[in-house]
Image (spheres, rainbow, N blue to C red):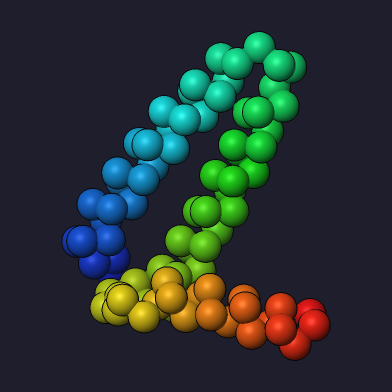
Length: 81
């Protein structure tokens, strides 16, 4: 696997810290863990997308990488899938 670009490494650390804080706060809500489950699902989905982008272009990311991810999802939705 290629080395992760330094700019991405800093952004990933910041995102991980922010999401950790949100997960801790969501865990403190007294609703039987429902909000925590939703936040955890979003956490897993976000880091799954990050892993996919890192797998495809870890060393030299472009500004087009995140945009193309959402454009392709829109194209598949228009096609009926």
